[in-house]
Each structure stands twice: as C-alpha cells, then as structure tokens.
Length: 112
Image 1 (cartoon, helix red, strand yellow):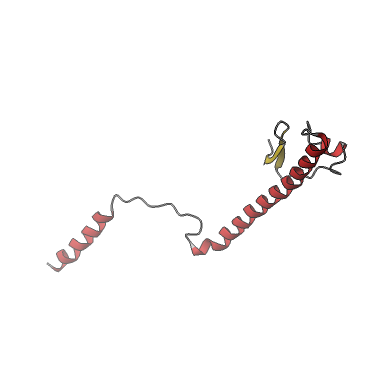
Image 2 (cartoon, rainbow, N blue to C red):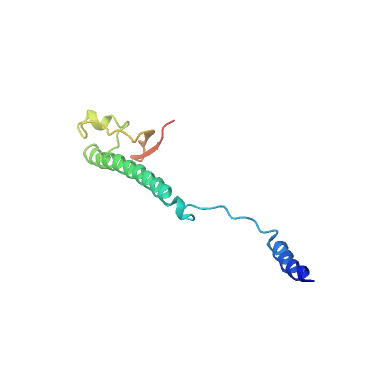
C-alpha cells in the first residue's frame, strides 16, 4: 500500500513532464560559459570596429572627391591618383571593399 502512495505521485510527475521539448541553450544562459561568451563578443566588437574605421576614412575621402570633382570616382584607386588619399586603407583581414561608383558608397564585405 505504501508503495502505491509513492508510485502514484512519481508516475504523475513522469507522465506530466512528457511532451515538453527541451529549449536550446542561448549564449549567456550558462554562467560557466561566461568567459567564452565574453571573448566571442570581444572578437565580434573588434571586427565591427575595424570595419567602421576602414569605411570611415574612405567615406570622408569620397565626400572630398565629390566636392572637388562633382562626381564620385570610378574606382577607389582614383582617390589616390588625384591626391585625396596617400594610399587606400587595408580592409580587415578576410574582408574586401565593395564600392558602388554610382552612389559613392563603400562597404566592407567578406572576401570572395
């Protein structure tokens, strides 16, 4: 009889928990992974900052070129040949510049 009193609530718990899906863990859910999450976030922030710095100087040079020539350069190398820049900045590692001459916009994209 005592076993039935113990088994009945246990069976209810087991059957009640069935059918629920486990939720996948997200970054920051486990405090034991905090240092790894932090290092990953630092890496992403560094890459983002490098992209911003690389495009900021080119954006400024494109504005100066447009003010002087009343057009955008056909290629980024034209910024060097007309003296707006001494040299083109290097894109971040594994990235390349994607320049649209029609709108004068430059983006940093993964190297193909």
